[in-house]
Each structure stands twice: as C-alpha cells, then as structure tokens.
Amino acid sequence: MTGPEFAFLVLAVIGGFGAIRLVTSRNVVHAALYLVVTLAMVGGSYLLLAAEFVAWVQVLIYVGAIIVLVLFSLMLTKAPIGREALDNQQRGIAALVGAGVLAGLIFLIQDSFGGKDISLHHVRTAQVGESIFRDFVLPFEVVSVLLLAALVGAVVIARKDEGPAEPPERRVPLIGRRQPTVSPREGVRR
Amino acid sequence: MIPEIVAATIRLPFPLIFSAVLFSAGVYGVLARRNAVLVLMSIELMLNAVNVNLVAFSAYLGQLTGQVFALFVIAVAAAEIGIGLAIVILIYRNRETINVDEVNLLKW
Image (cartoon, rainbow over all chains, first blue to last red):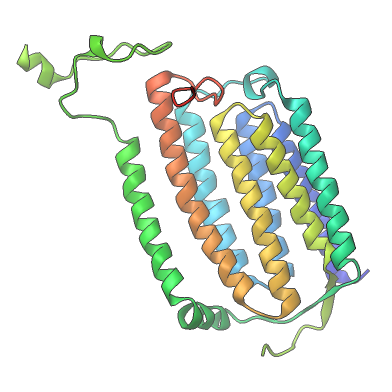
C-alpha cells in the first residue's frame, strides 16, 4: 500500500464514520457537526486526488458557508431531540435499501474497476481556469444566472409577508399555529 | 496533456467505495429522517459522493472535465440548499413543524 493510499484510507474511514453518525445521530446539532467532519474529509480526499482547487472550493463553500446556513436554520426551527422525533417508522426498510445500494455499488465497482490504478498528476489551478473559460463558458454563465435566481428566490421565499394580508380568521386553520399579530396597517383600516 | 510531476498511485476502488459509502448513508438519511433539515443534509451527502466520483475519474482519465463538473455541482448544491432552507423556514413559520411526514398539503 502506497503512502497516498494509506492517507486516503484514513480520510475515508473518518469520513464514512462521520456520514453514518450523521444519519443516525439523535441530536440535530451533533448531526450538523458530523457533516462538518465528513465534508472536511471529502475535501482532504480531493487534495489527495490532486484536485487542489476543488478541495479549497469545498472547504470555502461547504465547510464555510453551507454548514453555517444549516446551523442557522437548525437554530431558527425548533429542533427536537430523540430518535422518535427525528426518525420515522421506516428505519428498517431504509437501512435495508441503504445496505442494498452499498452492496450493489461495491460489487459493481470491484467488478468494473477492480485492478485499476489512478496515477496522480499535478494539476495547476490555471489549467482548471483555462478549462472553465475555454470549454465551459456557457455552463459557467448559466450557473451564475442560476445562483442569482436562487439568491433572489430565497430572499423572496423566506422574508416575512408584510403586504396587506387577509383577515387572520379567514386563513386556513393550521395545527399549532402562532397567534397572528395584527399589523398596524390593518389596525388603521379598522 | 498534464505534465507528470507526482509519481504516486491510488487504487481506483478506494475513492469509489468511499463515495459509495457516502451515497448509501445519504440514501438512508433521506428515507429514514423526519426532520427536513436533516433530509437536506443527507442530500448534501449524496451530492458529495457524486463529487468524489467525478474528481476520482478526472484523476484516473487525466482530464480536467470531471473537476470542472464537480465545481458546477458544488455551485448548484449551494443554490439548492439555499432555496431548500428558505422553504423549510417558511414551512416552520406557517406550521410550527418541519417534520416531512406532517407537511402533507400537496398530498392527496
């Protein structure tokens, strides 16, 4: 076993452990922190596969931004603790499906790529940039428009509704709804 | 195409099996979790499994297309989780719960 293989094995074991703890943990904040471990290990495996730029993008976007977003939304939504509150009744079937997917994938991987080796080459970030801006300019622009649309859409969806709403009594009754506050505009109208 | 500087090898099944483990854990999480934020985290896990595969095959084939595609996947995943969490927060504000089996407005 070569040095990079050993390092990759260590990263993969830690990352796989984090992934499994992520989906079985009983505390949502612990699950988010296990997600940090797994994403960091995935970033480390990118480094070992000589994809340096992708590794730093992974660290910046996933570990930096998405985890913060997830933790904030866990704080904004009341996160219950406990197996019954977090998991549904189909745990057994879900575990069966997951194990089946894993077994099938491992069989197919061993069958198809059993003896293949990756010989690692150094990849400069300039080459990645050249590839993006020479061969993939149109997808790049489409992704930028998509990100803008997602940004505007997320703001529109998540902000509080401040328009002249219908009277609170006539809204659809929902379970455990908070007491609707009368907005000052409606007070004036009455 | 790419100058050879590092002369080291990794067996190809290593990253592929790592990615398979991540993907299966994500499948289990999506199917078994009730909390919508945990479901979104499991989806991120599955997208990361795809990215590991893309980067591994990019290194195996000596081409950069896989890495560029992984970058695109990361960007789309960021957009997806932003929109997803916005929807989750909106559902929580309206219904005081984010359990995916209690949110059945579109179910008939």
